[in-house]
Length: 314
Ligand SMILES: Nc1nc2c(ncn2[C@@H]2O[C@H](COP(=O)(O)OP(=O)(O)O)[C@@H](O)[C@H]2O)c(=O)[nH]1
Ligand SMILES: [Mg+2]
Ligand SMILES: [Zn+2]
Image 1 (cartoon, rainbow, N blue to C red):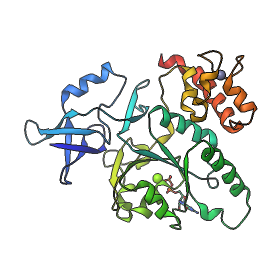
Image 2: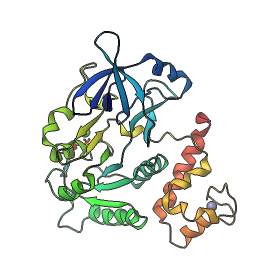
Image 3: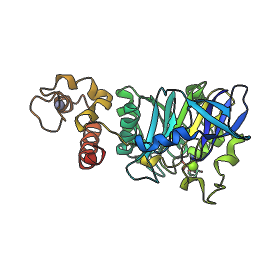
Image 4: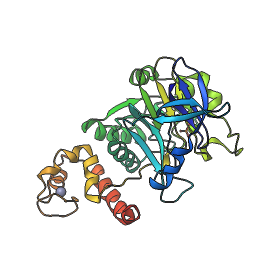
C-alpha cells in the first residue's frame, strides 16, 4: 500500500494511506543500517511518500521510501554532527514573522530563506500580529513597511494577517489551498494560534504533551502533518531554530540569496565571496543601491559564521 508519512517520532510513524486511513508503522531494519553510512540520523521524514507492508506479526512496516522532491534538515538533537531530515516533499514554506512582541530580525529571515532556497522550497513571508500595528504610525509599523519592501522587491510573496483576530486569513488560505506547506518561524510569532484559527479542530493536538517523555511538544522532535479542510496540508515543526545545516562551500552561499544570484556571474573571480575582492559585481550592486544594505550585511554575517563552522562539515 502507498501512503504519506504524517507523523514521525523516530521509533514509529503514522502513514496516511489512499482512502485516508492512518496506519501506525515501524521501519524495516534495512533502512536503519543506512544511518551510519549517511549523515542522517533518521531515514524517514514527515511528507515522505512510502510503501508499507505487513511485517511479521501484526505490525505494518515501511518498506519503500520514494525519492524526495525536496526536504529540509536540522542538526540532530541526539547525534552531534548528524543531520535530521524533518520534512520532505513540501510545496512551500510559510515563514511567520512579527515586528512586535516579539520582533523577528531580518538576520533570522535571511538565514531561513538561505536554507529554504538551498533546499528548493519556495517561501511566503507571513507578517502576523497586524492588530498590534493598526491605526498608528508606530515604530513597529514603520519597521514592517521597511522589512516587507526588502523582500517584495526581490520577489518574495508577503501576506499580512492577525491570527488572533482572524484578519486576512482568507488571503492566507488562498496561498495554502491544495498545497503542502511547512510552518516556520521562531517561538512566539503565533504559529499555534494560526493553526487553531485556520483549523479549529486541531487545537488540542498542537497543545498535546508527548506521551513518551511527558514534556511539552516544543522539547520533542516530533513533526506532524495536518490535513486542511479547505484542501492541502500543513507541516508543523517544533524546534525550527536549528534549521540551516548546509554542506556547500562558503562561496556558494550567495547563490541562495536570490538577488545576488542574478549578478554574481559578473564577478571577476568565480569563487568570489563578495567581501572585498576586486571586480565584485555583488558589492557594486550593493554600492549602487540595487542590493539592500540589510541583506548585504546579513549575507556578510552569515558568511563569517559559516566560515567559522565550515570545517565541521567538510
Ligand atoms: N496580538 C496578537 N497576538 C497574537 C497573534 N497571534 C498570536 N498571538 C499571541 O502570541 C503568543 C504566542 O502565540 P503562539 O501561537 O503560542 O506562538 P508560537 O510559539 O509561534 O506557536 C500568544 O500569547 C498568542 O495569543 C496575533 O495575531 N495578534
Ligand atoms: Mg507553538
Ligand atoms: Zn563578488
